Length: 501
Ligand SMILES: Nc1nc2c(ncn2[C@@H]2O[C@H](COP(=O)(O)OP(=O)(O)OP(=O)(O)O)[C@@H](O)[C@H]2O)c(=O)[nH]1
Ligand SMILES: [Mg+2]
Image (cartoon, rainbow, N blue to C red):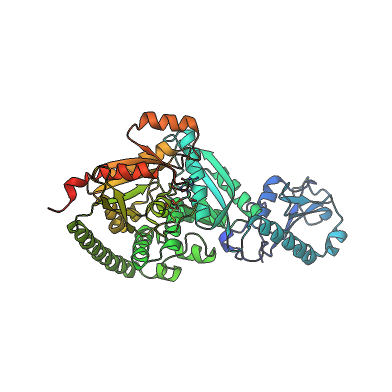
């Protein structure tokens, strides 16, 4: 296919030009190189073999009359041959033969070798991806000066959960410490090579970075690594796209995706279609993304109007409820805190709960009757469960989900659910507070409920009691502390002040 002058590295083919990585791992290309040194291929050449997924790399070492002295000539002959190829073994990504004679190599059945290798690769990939349809993912974390090591690690663990909530399997995590992200490639050149090599060796089909990437960074990385690259926001948007059930949910997700992707469209189409589907490609669909920007802009305007209508509709519903004099409490909190489990436990609602991030997207409101301890009459309250929050909630999502988030801020009071069994519970509270502060409306009075106390250790319980003396402690799953919670909710809305005259 190609004849080049230079080392295998200098003459390598860019990953984007290689046959697409599909059912077969190897690219179907073999590289035949000559060398004057009588040595096995260098680490550098072997790395290039892995990056290009070559069937084999064959090095012919040459020798001849005065060959070396005159710096090359016509009368060289092959002294020995090294045959290198990739392996599926965990210990080493490749093997290199002992020096062989030209005759032996010429008789080698390379097609048979490739077939065996492909079978090996398939076996390891199958072990890796327990369920079909899950994609193998490599995580990349870049630790900058603005983070403590703990924050960085927590962020990476959360990203791994996001990936598995999106249906991916994290196969490995690579990290780099930098004073600031590299403007072109986020990580340094050496790290790009390492990522590319690991990605090819492990056979992952997606690489997820722990920060937002610029369109140029994505393009540069994909061109050098040859595997689809997405950022944290894309993973969150993908989960939302998979979870959206209702018309309103789908509408808001589409808006968020288009708003996030519009400025990132330039030049992405080609690379995206070459590198296949999966996390970060669901939702509005690839063809739609390739339509002219102006068409997308029109679609965004249209969706914005729909969301505004939805906002108005929900406002009317709230108004009606308000007229009935039933106080409304919104259940808020970090994603996976147990909000839906709590709503189900308190009201026999049937909201989907799962150990996944963003299990709930659409708001559900249920009536809860609480016995007034003084008058002994049952009093109604409205509880609304809705979408969970996350650290650095993408701005496109906040804007698109304004109709849903308003359900939260327009409530008469807030019940803030915190997963006390989570090591980062304190920073979860901070993130939720930060998001609430950004809301256009000042949220009403709030009550903190520490959930999952069945899983929290006693030191943490003591600390939470000291820091939040007003809080209440529950286990939604084990139905602990719910009676106290009911009464605290009643006190919270200052019931007397809200009944009709
Ligand atoms: N051990 C324990 N697990 C709980 C408790 N409450 C909820 N869980 C579990 O925590 C996970 C998340 O619960 P959900 O109710 O889906 O959480 P959520 O806050 O609605 O989460 P999103 O809708 O995804 O934002 C589920 O696996 C629940 O079974 C609890 O009190 N104790
Ligand atoms: Mg939920």
